[in-house]
Length: 86
Image (cartoon, rainbow, N blue to C red; front, side):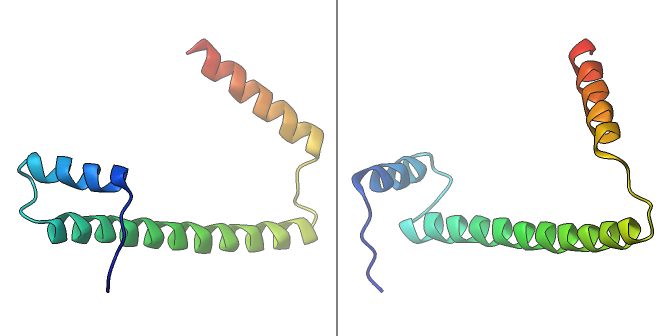
């Protein structure tokens, strides 16, 4: 597989090589791919958790356990004021 890099990307890789942390271009690219994979896995886990939370919330709302929007807004405003005071 041939890869074409922009000048900025090439410079970035050269900088990483000159730091001494990496022994080759392949090492830099392998690390980058590893980090991309970890990021993707984290996103997928977040997405699954969010979908689960939405399903739980939908069931709660169907049972009438929801909170009125004006109450939510007031709670958020209060939380924001508390953060500003800290």
